[in-house]
Length: 324
Image (cartoon, rainbow, N blue to C red; front, side, top):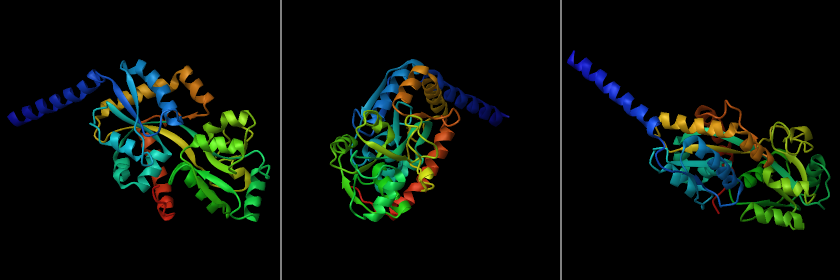
C-alpha cells in the first residue's frame, strides 16, 4: 500500500513537472540558428518567422547566423545545445540532408534532432543566360546531348542542392557538362545576367526578380506541379524527364530530448505564424509554397525529413562527393 501511494505521488510529481514546462516556457529569449550567411533565403525566412513568433510566444526571437563547412557547423551548434527549447535549428535540404551525407560531425545529429514543423518549400529551377541557344527544356536536353561537355553549369559548393541537382540532371537526361564552383548564389546570378555562365540549378525564389526583369530564361522546375510564382515554366515531367523532383524545403528543429510540451508550444507558435495573412503574403511573394496544416507538425516534418535522407544520402555517397 505504501509503495502504491509512493508510485502515485511520484507520477503526480512528474506530471506536474512536465506541465510546468509548458506553463513557464518561454521565460527568456529564444535563439534560432541559421547555418547560412545573413541576407540569404534561409536568413530572410527565419527573420520573417521570428518577428511573428515573438507575438505568439511573448519573447524575443534572436536569429543567429553560424556558417561554415557546408552548413554543418551551424547544425552541430544547434544539435549540441541544451534541450530546453531556447536554441532551435532552421534549415533546408543543403543543411539538413546534404551536410549529413558529407560531414560525419552532423550525420547522427540529423537523425536524432527533434522535428518541430515543416515550414515551406520552393522547387529548384534550371535557368540559363539569355543568349543560350535552346529556347525550351526539350531543346536544352537535345542540345546538351549533341554538345557533351560544352555547357558550363554553376554549383555553389560540394553537396549543395545546386551541385546535386546538376549531377542528378546529368544522370536522368544522359547529358554531360562542365561544373563551375562558386562561393554562393549571388555571384552566380550576376554571371548569368552577364552571360559568363550558361546554366544554374537555382532555388526558384532566387530567380524571381531576374525572370520578371527578363534578365535570364527559365527552362524547367524540379517539382511534380508547376510553381505558382512562375506558372508558365514547365515541370521536368512535362518535358519528358520523369521523376526529377528536388525541392528547397525548410523546417524547424530542436535538440534531441527537448520536452514534448515545449515542442508542442513551439509548433503551435509556428502554426499561428504560418496562418497569419501578412506572413503568408510575404512568403508567397518570395516564392514559397507554404506547408499544409498537416505538414506543420513534428510528425509531418519527421516523416518528410526521413524520406529525403533515405532518398538522397545513397545518391550523394554513390557520387563520392567530398567537402570543398
